[in-house]
Amino acid sequence: MSTGRWLLVGALGVETAPLMRRLKGARPHSTRLVLGRLDDVEVGILTVGVGPDKAYRRARAALELWEPMRVLSFGTCGALVDGLMEGALVTAHRISGPDGSGVDVKPLPSFRAVDVVTVEVPVWTADRREELAGVGHDVVEMEAYAVWQAVRAHSSDLPFAALKVVSDQAGGVPDPALDADVTPNQGRRAIKIAQFKARALKLSETKMAPAVLGLINTRSASG
Image 1 (cartoon, rainbow, N blue to C red):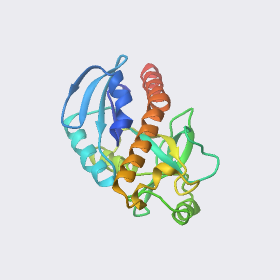
Image 2 (image 1 turned 30 degrees about the vertical axis):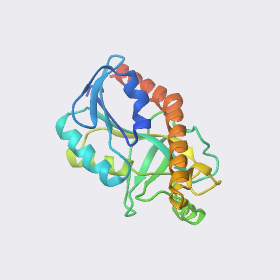
Image 3 (image 1 turned 60 degrees about the horizontal axis):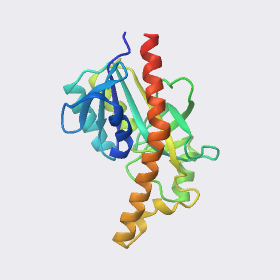
């Protein structure tokens, strides 16, 4: 099967924007799906929003609108184990959902393969971090398992992979930009969210976008 025609699925606008800026011939295909080309490869970039429910619904809708040959879930994640530092690029070899069910997936070459868990609520505390790490999860995020479910609901053999960049130590080292949900002051909360989005944008621009471009070009050249 040709590896052209990729669907790239991110959650936040700050995650998808660096790839959007690189699109040639960009054209909206729906409210959240933009089509174009990255170098010579046809791609669709989908911004699903945060959380597994939105990721599943919007990925399913996009798959019905536009038939890709590969699907990549990409974006930021939080590290649950020591040794995974901010900026590290990782690929999933296993993904688990909020209900504890899990599935093995094919990892991408040239990246560290990790166990990914998708959650409905961000990991803020050390206890929650230890709970998830204790059953073998390496990183946490909020969309990949739901995107995989959407892909499998659409097709039993559509190639899927997940590529993530570590943006924080989920529930670990205190992160001033990530305690927004426990900050009562709304102005302060907004500032913290903006700080995190700025970090996510920088990592997406400097780490994720170049990695995705390299991945697409390598896979497409190999056929």
